[in-house]
Each structure stands twice: as structure tokens, then as C-alpha cells.
Image 1 (spheres, rainbow, N blue to C red):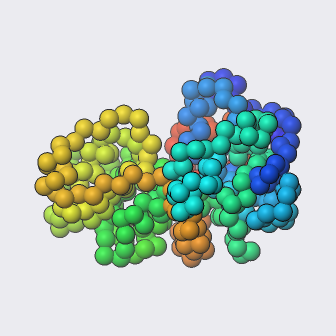
Image 2 (cartoon, rainbow, N blue to C red):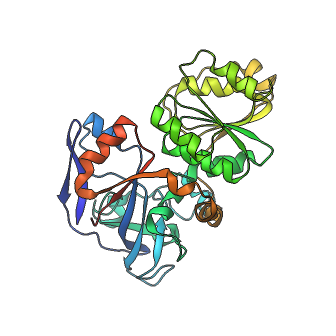
Image 3 (tube, one colour):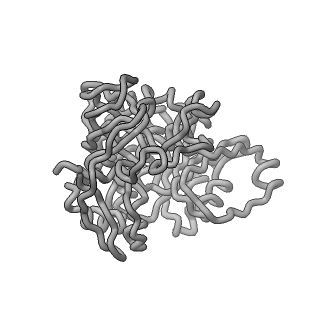
Length: 338
């Protein structure tokens, strides 16, 4: 099968590797749509990793044993390789599982773990059915485009009475606008990229602020009548955005951190947490039981399709990653069979 590979700094190609083989309850899925996420950073760095991608929608083509899926099923591929047996997995919070399978050790091969390829292997309980009327590209939005902020908004109980701040309007943050608007909330965005700021307004953000504007906080307060945002979700993983959220959210408000960040964010416990009475959430994905509601957003939100700005055949991976690295895009979909 064809699979994406990084071969140098800002250099990518497609290589041929053996087709994976289903084992146990791990089914073989033909990938029709592979949304592209943060893997472009490996392309920019030239990390030479073996495979890339953690998002996909496709068709089950083979199983090793009878189970929850069968050949011909159209499925969304949920992320990760959780154990499926611990209390977190059983409760639907599988993304926080502490006992993930070591893929190559379990399957006996490195092939089939990544989504930027023509085939992959996945546990059958992590293959969610796609409604007949939803195409593969749109279904694929139920992973990182809409998933992280959907889970965050469930934790914060975002509704039509809220004004929500979304910081970092990459594909995840743009998906946050769609999720917030579907719930009836007003949305404020924070983003420096002009393309994404324009797209954010198209998706329904009423106000988009530039983090480089020294009056950004003043403008937010004016927009909210001096009260501040009710809820905030950071999708950038940037420390300055974390600080902005802490200052911008009203007393007794909620903040969710979604964007991966490996730096320390300093804040004052008394000022930001105790006196303001803030609730801070760590959010990664939604509970598996919420999948039908995520699909409802995809089917009913008029803005959802506008999240996808570009599609590329797998042979154009170089151009796709160059586009992502430049930032002038929303969600980009890779098509392994084109």
C-alpha cells in the first residue's frame, strides 16, 4: 500500500509498504479521507518518522473474526490504541487510557498504525458508524476538527446564553466556532493569521481579535459590556493565549485547554483562580457516547462544510504540507486513493 514518509527537512514523499493484516478484533480499514493535523510540524523539522496521521474515515474491508463491524461498513476511525478494558475505556473516556496498546508489538508489524496511508488497522469498538447520507470527508470532521472543542464545550456546558472566546483559529479552533454557534453561543476569536481570521468570520465569529493588537483585551471587554467572556477554549497551545484567557473570562467563568503545550503557563492562584472563581478544564476529545451528537453537528450545522478548505491526492503530500505550514487553510483532507 501507499504511505506518507518524511525524507528530509520540508521534504515528503510516498512509499510502498506491505498491506496490514487484521488480527483479533482489529479490523482492516480502507482509508478514503485522512484529515491532516499537526503532523506538518514533523515535515517542517524533517523528523524522518515512519508514518503519519491519526484521523480517518473509510470502509471496513476485512476482519479476523466476527465482531462489531463487518466488511462494507462505513466508519469513522477514532484516535489512539487504548486498551478497551480499563474503567476509562469502559466509561467512554478512552482517550485518557493509561494502557495503550503498543501497536507493533501487538499486531506483529509496524504497518497499519497511521492514517496517511491506504489501509490501517483499528480495534472494532473504535470504529463508529457513518450515517448513509454523510460522505467520508464530512464524517472525518468528527475527529480533530470538531472533536476536541465538542468535548470541551460539554465539560463547560456551553449554551445559547454564553459568549465564548476561542484562541488559536487553526482547524481545531475553527471547529470550535462551528460547535459554539451550533449551541447558540456568541463567539469571539483570537488569531493573527489573516486567512483564518476571515474564515472565522465566515463560520460565525462575531468578533475576531489580533493577539498582536495592544487593545485586544479592551475590545473584548467592550464587546461583552465590561463583563468578560463566559467561557474560553484555547486551541493554540501558546502560553500568551493561556494568559489572555485567564484575564478575559469573567468571574465564575470556565476555561478549557485543548491545544497541546509542553511549556509552563504561570498564573497567580489567588488572582486568577480563587478570587475569580474560575473552573479550569483539560480537554482532549469527547466521550465516545457523544459521537451521535458530534455527527448531528456535521449533518445540521450549515458552516461545517466550510471547515474543509483543501483536498489533495496522496501523491501531492509535499504541496499539502507546504500549505499547512503556511497557515492559509482550514482543514486539509488527504485522499489516499487519488
